[in-house]
View 1 (tube, chains in turn green, purple):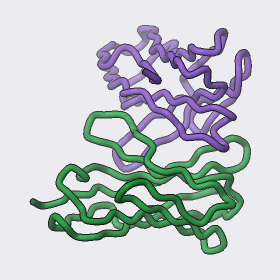
View 2 (cartoon, helix red, strand yellow):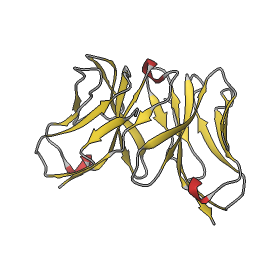
View 3 (cartoon, one colour):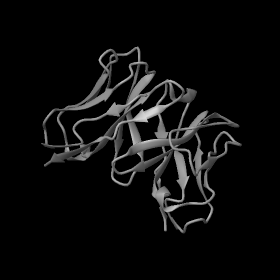
View 4 (cartoon, one colour):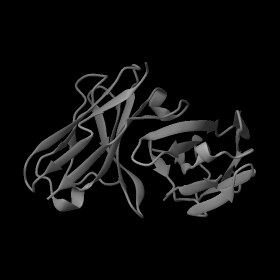
Length: 111
Length: 114
């Protein structure tokens, strides 16, 4: 059974730092992996989608990488800003049309 | 504007009183899904639909029903709500079954069952 883990559960860094969020999954048979952002009381917004054949995707200050063989993905945020404060979730699309989510990393950027 | 619309945003009800949470998308997506989000348990899939008249159970389907009579709508029905169904619910949609395209989420429905 696919399991998705995100460590740490919470992270606080000063503004301007580059940071990395981690996501690991137990079954490498995935179609894709997505990173989402969730603000308190709001829905999820998809940030980046990496297909299983891809190694990374970039959008602005965000870069996501995927290593299927090791079951890992990272989300790199460059030059962090207070507006980046949110919970970040990763999700893998496994077989049988199942999308499995990690529990998220709650990120706080200190001004 | 491309969006997934859920209603209501907040709902307080009592045990046993049937309710429906509506979900509609305007992107002509084939794939739609319902999730519940609980502290410490993350997002768990309730039901999903690959297309009209095609629905299947997710990880936590007990106590819920869905229907997909039209492509744009995917309502979630609680026939006899219980307090353990108090949760934050999200509807989501995607094209191509979510395999190649991003998943779009609604703003959520906070349900409290007393």
